[in-house]
Length: 218
Image (cartoon, rainbow, N blue to C red; front, side, top):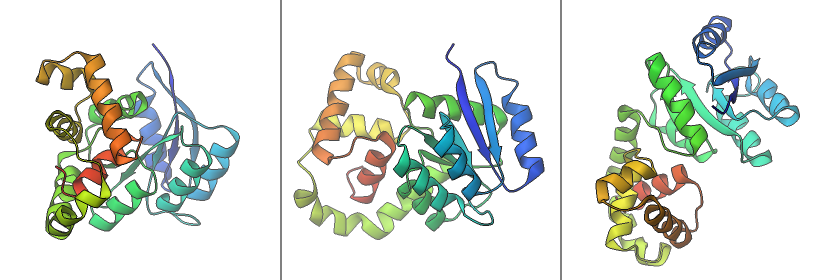
């Protein structure tokens, strides 16, 4: 089993130590380091880029959004999971736009946190229902009408099958689950997803879903 190197970033010592204790119980999760603020995280990633970063959002010296932006700009291969207590629409949007792969709340059960780390490392989407609901509500309430008018200019039209696959991606389904749901081969699903990426001009799974939500595609 491939080991996943993780950097834990949180300004609370008890939270850092608690996360470390939980994650070290998993044989494939290795704690590469810990940081107390965004600035330390950026410096650590510059020297020793981990596979996954668990990033708190409100910290002294540099917050999690800015640290996420700097880390992903320097090394897009580093996958960042924002892990916070703040369920606020603007913070969710800012964090994901900065390059985070998902936004999770600290009351998440430990087994779900472990699942999310593995999913994000594989390149899948993992999103809590309450976070996904807020993104959908925001897209529907603030962008839907405007986006429908803009779609013809923003993107090349997606096929019906591509729309089905995009909707399942938004639900967090990986390629094998999508293939099973639609009775397709995984290779066919991958080809459709490549087509979606090409039409939208985006090659990141999370950002594709955010784009689709914002512009009323799903």
